[in-house]
Length: 61
Image 1: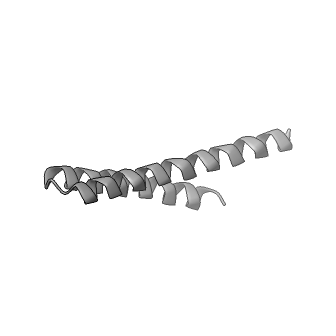
Image 2: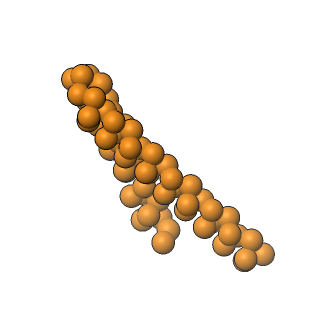
């Protein structure tokens, strides 16, 4: 896992921002909430990748 996962996670976050924006513009609370959930999921996955990178750096030293 590496760059591909990081790209996928960032894409999920951006997709969520888009959904949230469209939901907000159209007064679709469900779409807005779905967008926020996608962003949160992407952020959590990105945090996991950062932890893995930090752990790998510690092991490599």
